[in-house]
Length: 164
Image (cartoon, rainbow, N blue to C red; front, side):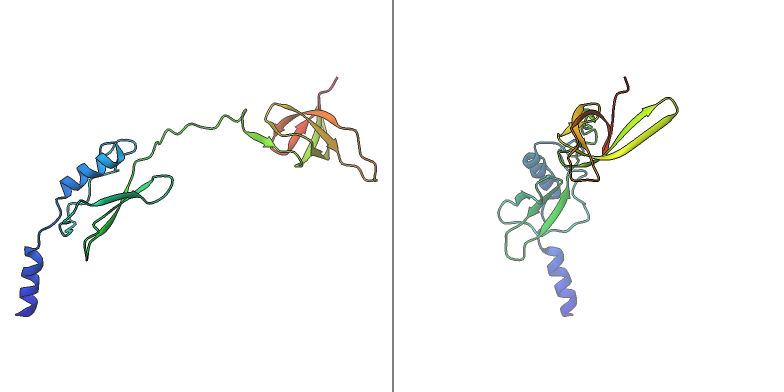
């Protein structure tokens, strides 16, 4: 008898209006459901959240704003996590502007010609992106330091010399 009464009491408790919760989430994010920056989908209608006596609170779960936290601060309240739609067409970094070699990096200095390729280790003396010319110093076996030379960055860790 008591379990049946508890079940009836639970069923009679007012529940949170999930449509209204969706509206509040859209107001917080500034974007509608399914739009970039808005909730991926509506709050699951199968949820039976107890009605909040005050307005639910909203905050970001992380700095990237990929998830929103909606919570009821009432005693015995609830908390749900809402995924946020991200920009799928994020700008791709331009390889010509990204640093491929940093000062102090070990690089392979390559000289390429018709049917041959020679390389030796060296050290980058400047930062640079693919296609840029930077100063590099070839590594030496003895204590003398080799004179710096100018080489073009072919890919990260590899620079080439121009054949004259």
